[in-house]
Length: 431
Image 1 (cartoon, rainbow, N blue to C red):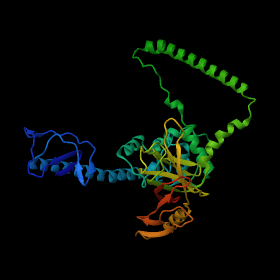
Image 2: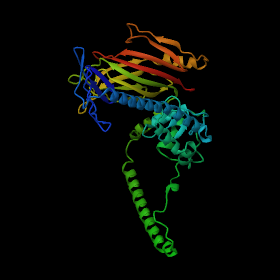
Image 3: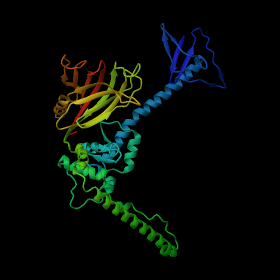
Image 4: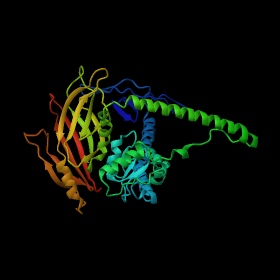
């Protein structure tokens, strides 16, 4: 028996030469094959297909499918260079050659939902705002889609962003400079984007009533409508002001420690960052069972006060994520912590093990390679697997195409079994 798998179709023919083809008017009707393809006793078995193809029909279908796949692959291959060229073209525009927040030349990072080109120092403060306010991507390190570049182009770059968010900066408040402290930088960015203190809200107001060609309407009815709106606004404002004063009086006895959490919330952006680390969570192997026969695992990455989570993979003890996550490296470099959990719908998620990785050697190797002019791939260091650590194999640090990477396979701790494979890439602050 011969079996061909073409795209989404499974075609079966016998070896006896009896290949019937049910074709009418040069058209062929096929059913999408069922996903069950069972191997038993060295033989392939599958459900019957809608029809059997003749040699010529099979040849035409194979040729048509091959052409479609080639066209799709060519399209995918052309997608990345085109988006990269468009990003570089946007970077060359006058308003985008400096960081939108501090003026540092040659920014290499973007706040996607804000539309601003920013430097690596300001990117750390942007991340502290949360992705719902500012989602940070690298111009060169991240993979951009055409839709993302289209959205960024539509916003208009740094000139349009600052025209919106910096219209009303007070005279006694200075915008940070490239050498400003992390505290000044984080305070400005939080005021600018989260609290929007510098937005000129009066420019957003417009008359809700259409202007009539009749001067009588302009002088009488429109005037009366405007007066009514004004009285309603004054009444509403007065009510809000009275309510605010009453609330302030009632709460005046409260202790000041109730305001502490708000202050601590902004401290995340006031940390000095020395670089970024991209973590590719590749796969898990032989993970622990937390449901009846399987688990729904996901991974949490933790670095200092930052934490990110992968997606959940259902019913899999050997999940493949291949998910890339980016974290900022604080000045006092903490270890990278990996925590694996089983997702539960109605109860607390079950613990499936953890691991700790020292990223200091990787960062040191990345800094040392900055001044190197060698473009060839080379080994920079090694985290040797011993009985004292939980490495499955040596974690070799290499430089490939100017990027410093480390592949790590590590046993999960505080659990009965499980291995996690990750790929690390480190970018020092100067990049």
